[in-house]
Picture 1 (tube, helix red, strand yellow):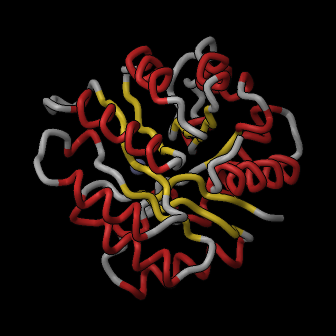
Picture 2 (tube, protein in one colour):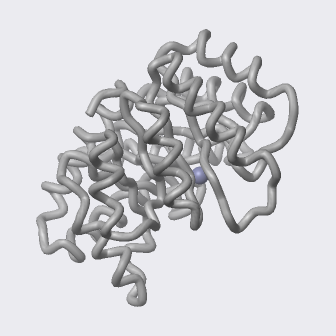
Length: 241
Ligand SMILES: [Zn+2]
């Protein structure tokens, strides 16, 4: 079986040996592709280095909403995007749980960059679904992904109509998350992705358990969901829907 981890932060492995071990475990589990997301200018270099070392890792460069409002990142971000033609924008977005002025402006500016460079974007969103939808409507991107989707089942069609992919993590197995599983069930098959947020979830190999949980929730074979999401991940990384 082939798996794709749609969202992780491999740069957070502090020791090379730990990263090597996590990547070896992922390869042994059949994880053939993944998106490694930067969060600020401080980690973009490391993300790039990791993507050069491990085939199958697509680098993403972006300013996370938790770091919004700082100066000087935009020129450096453009530099990374120019230097790495296969890179995506991310992790960008809006987070109502973090009081960081400048989130709206920084997210909009990065969506504009995604549009200008014709790159797919990886979005983080906490309780700002209408605002994110509004920004995405303006941005008209080739493709985007809502990582750790936590929006309503009803909004799935609105995002899907704009070219959205939806990524789910281990929370779909939580007994109390009925609405999250309803959202999972509402996602069109060709837009479905799974993620670990590694180093969480035991590393990128942990995506196999997420796929198993989705299979149980949807009543579909895990093999089918693994192949489907791996194909979706490959298409997303290339910026197509
Ligand atoms: Zn993340």
